Image (cartoon, rainbow, N blue to C red):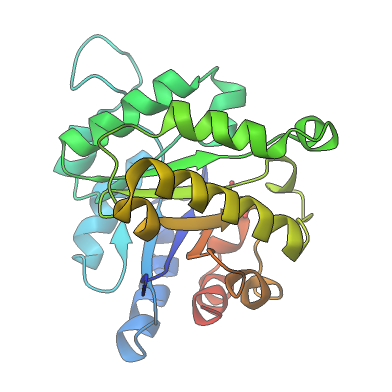
Length: 248
Ligand code: PGA
């Protein structure tokens, strides 16, 4: 089966209106030399509408980093999946470990956020991954199974969902798992999704995330069942992000 890979930039809490130059640099490079994968950038919420208008959905799709599970209401500071869609966002990251750890998000909440994304016809980029303590305790695959069961909703399909495997200890640390460790995790995720979703599970894109850089991207993207990457720090600079995109 051919799966079109996707490389997604997660800007986290970085970027101002002046950052449109980085986006323009990525977009113009890809316009003149098309990538062999899909490309998405998830800037902070303040930039979603502007970026979506600037880029017009051509070579780079725009997404968001989080949403609430309710469509509207008294949730100060939150944004809904419908607002992201309204702003031109095509997908939303849910369950990133920084939100699980820093904002107490549970699998149940992540699941509800993914359902909200699907209800508004945008994609859900569902993040899972073990902590260092869980890996050291030999519990990585069990943790991944639990997170997949809890965070991925029954309405997930290959078209509306992407799974990002991000070992918590590899995010922003410069440390990456070995190729064998990534291969083991991705094979387990694929097997679990295929058993639950059949053909959709076979075709759902599985991204690796955590300290992907221009120097290690090609090796990581060549691993079985790795269908692209979720890129944090290295997505902030157009030249690094482009080098990673070209490594697909
Ligand atoms: P990193 O972040 O590439 O900076 O490690 C990845 C992520 O958190 O999505």
